[in-house]
Length: 200
Image 1: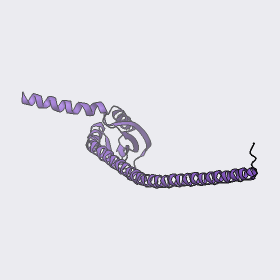
Image 2: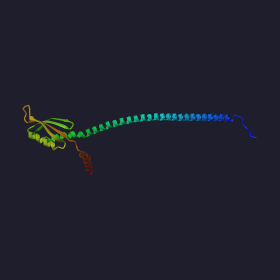
Image 3: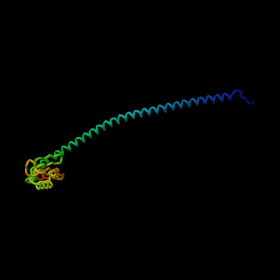
């Protein structure tokens, strides 16, 4: 004889399904919350690490800026020292040139020409003097042109001597020449040769 189930099995099955769905929904919510928390924690940790890196980079950049400032200061100091050394070296080279210039002036003066004033501004020389004639002044200019230490003679003024003197007063400009590098290089060689000759 067949058995008939009179219990409300459909309601029980529906209730079981609703219960299972509720458990699955709760599990999904818990999993989503856990994933959200983990993601938030990971992002926060990454942001914190990036902030630490940024602070470290700022410190390193600050140190580099200080070092760059020190290097620039040292470069400026080095430039000043190099400029001073160049000035000192130039003065050292020009020291004997003054002696040569005055010696050359004495050699270039022809008879009948007398200097009353000699002024120098950098490489420019202003010569004032008295000459017996304009021919003597021309000779002086030719001597300056052929000189080793003087060049570019330019006659500025020639006028009759005042105070009843004889001859003409003149103003002449010339340029001081510096020793050429070849001459500077030959000087030590000449000294070495002289030393070798004296030693032999």
